[in-house]
Image (cartoon, rainbow, N blue to C red; front, side, top):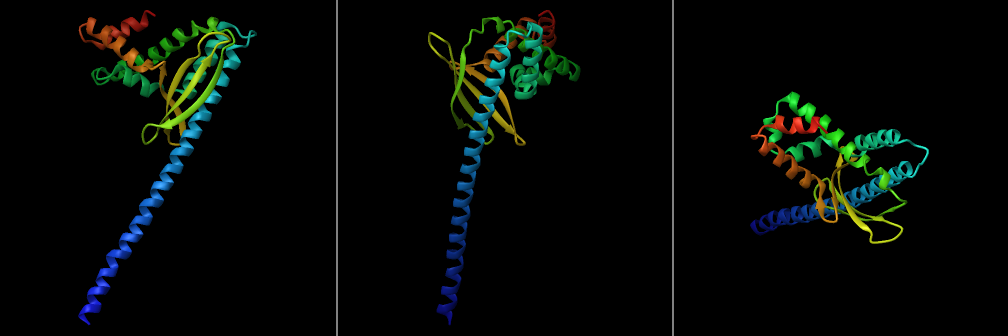
Length: 209
């Protein structure tokens, strides 16, 4: 009787271990499927954005102002400006007042629109192709793409895309291995340091642009 009881108790951990193993494997397979779906979705997201950008860049019937308006709308729809802006400002974000934070995000968006809109005239029929996507975190994917000119070398552009509540948003752009967010963060930090460590010094600079 004692032997049977011992054997009975030994069976419980074995059954639990089997069930736990099945649960872990099932979760791993489910997570892999979710990440694969996220990567595929992020890749389609960037491909659609590229086609949208080319459609208005190549439209000679649109004025510069109209192209800027379309770019600003695309920026707001496709990019997480708040996340990018906070990252770029770094530790200085917490040092800023709520009013300064609000103004900074507005000026930061204006700066992006101004800088990239100035390059619209340089568009000369380049093609945009999406090559692959891979996950880099729980909710992030990096989508690799290329800007392909009619002649000359193609340019690699990686897009860090985050899935936020089922909606994809770009949080960084890496051109030929150089992060635009990190580059801008370094530039802004230099402006603030030259201004005595004050966020207001950066705001003054951005207002003048």
